[in-house]
Amino acid sequence: MSGRADSETHPEMSGDDDGLEDEPEDLAEVARRARWTAAGAGALLTLAGLAAALLRLSRSASVLAPAAYAAGAAVCAVAALIGSRGRTRRALWLLIAGVMVMALGDQPG
Image 1 (cartoon, rainbow, N blue to C red):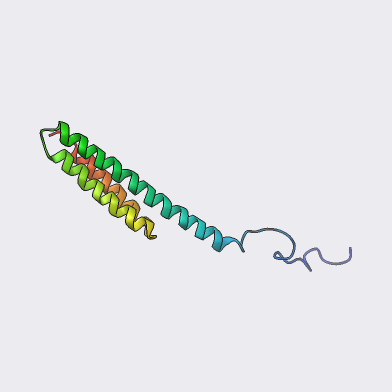
Image 2: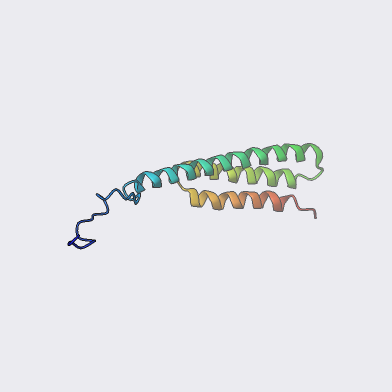
């Protein structure tokens, strides 16, 4: 016990798992999940918008609400497409814009 405590310890050889060597795989997995989430949310919102447009078209006297739902669904479809290609931040903003178009177009008035 005459040596220093920190003299011969190397973090990569000591058995401590910092996870640094797994970081590129983890980032790739996070990016893959983000792409799947953006594409899935965009597809789900597109289907919901198209279904709402068809329902409003059959019941509504005004064409504004079905047009707003269809336009919002188109924006969400574009978001799903670019989200699946890795542009998840832009896809998120487009999803928000698409849902806002659907919501604002359905306001009475």
